[in-house]
View 1 (cartoon, rainbow, N blue to C red):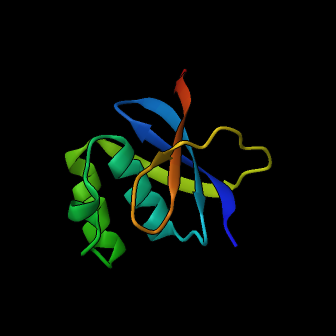
View 2: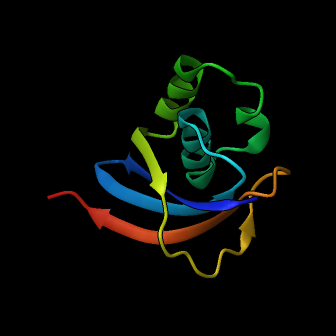
Length: 97
């Protein structure tokens, strides 16, 4: 059964939040989602199985401080980003001040 999650991360000193639907979520998955959301590809992230490898790739996209939580309300998930039937929705940008 799929559940809804929020992926929180920093991109160029701006906080971003993405909402995803997946069968499960782990830290590694959250980092991969953030990278894909910022222009990375599934092919680029799929072979990486270690958090250190993912963080090195994330630095290339200026992505840091990734965390995730289970979402309470998620509507209109519409963009498929992988063959694992995960979906991505832009939940907006927030400035850090």
